[in-house]
Image (cartoon, rainbow, N blue to C red; front, side, top):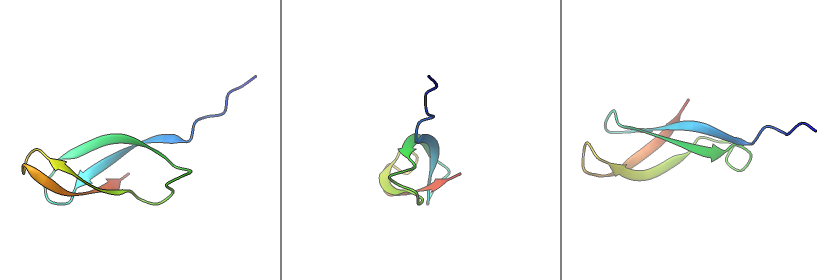
Length: 54
């Protein structure tokens, strides 16, 4: 029996204030829109907004 492909995809989260990027996964069924999170930016050494890019 064939398995269904999962709903999780790998996404890039890019900082809005520097070129830093995080790679993570999200469930595209639960979060169909683009993700926005406040995360730590090691180049600026503070928390900034990260947005999903494709």
